[in-house]
Length: 505
Image (cartoon, rainbow, N blue to C red; front, side, top):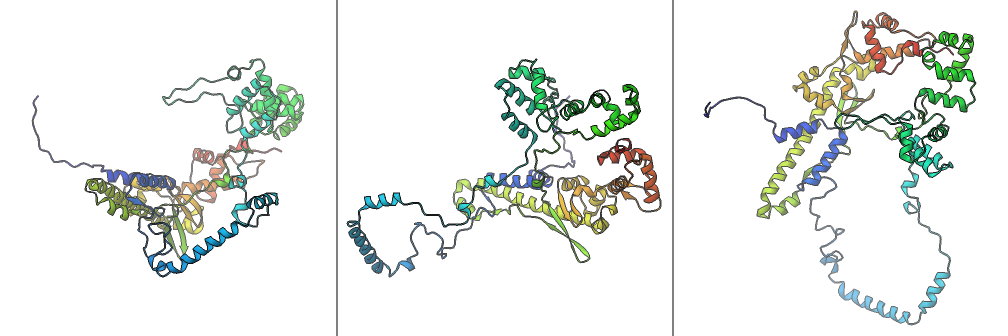
């Protein structure tokens, strides 16, 4: 072994800070980009936006304040001094003379006894605060806590009830499973007795307090599983013993519509099982259905680009509303450049500002360019709807615009486009192809919509099986697809299997 020098020529890709910043900005969503711009505005004094006015005010503007703050321009004050000063002096003398004749104590006493005059002002001063006009949907924990405050629980029982309400899941069930730690391990599962010990309640009293909570509105909330949820509702609503037995012992058979097994086990006619199942279906399996933490009316997505039809062609426009327009703070730059010790600092900040503005502009042009390519390849979709969506992959757009597939993936992630057909994520237009018998390939998203349409039109008492959907797709649309693919697409659409879609009543 020895130490020696070698001269070698090689090529390698160096990720400069400018390139890293451009890649980072490219994959940011609209809201993330706005936050990033705000951070850069706070960190770089050379940057300015519309809220920061770096331009000096026009000195001829008489509405602008002068350096003294309350003096008027000289040309307005010339010739007025001799005329104004005597008037002011005479006014002071008249006021002093009149002040000697007024009994100010009597004046203030009479004014205090007068009723206040009604306000004649209109507008925002008379309106209540905006916070009093804002409303938000009531979520299930708040609704239960309101009922808890109205109850006659003691302090210990109230603490236990608060722990129960604080451990409800999105369905309204009591979820005491452990949570996953950052290192990958899980915390141990809890029980009702553990909550009782933490609240200082006797574990023997915990089931009774939990039962009272489950009878709050909505009935069945705070249950630990579906069986307990339905059982509590059946008891409160006065169901008979036979229906309670079906809930407690045959919920799995009830879900599969296996009424014969229930009739054999409980030794009753199958007609009675039908009647019991019809009544049980009226119960609520998800107590938190009408309660939500998020107001759907406030959820809004601001598109990054717009696709507008102008005659026979589609025009792509970027949406810059809400995104600050950045420029160099020229006034501050000129002022700080006078200091020779600050030139190096100013130079670095100016370069960073120019890189940021250039990266934001490049991001905007790239999104528009990719969207124009998507519009060109998916013109039938924009003209006629989802059923005419063509198969397309990242490579198709990358080859057309002359970019790498990873760049196209970053551009289309968390970016939305407003089209004549609705609001879509840019990734929505990339679909795998499904073969057709005698026509061009069709996009997988179009196949999903075709499956959804077939299921919506089926007879609910005799729903189509997955194999029947396969045959219908081939006969109607000429789409060749496997049964397991239909099952996968059906699950992605949130549609149950045929045995669970069947409605007997």
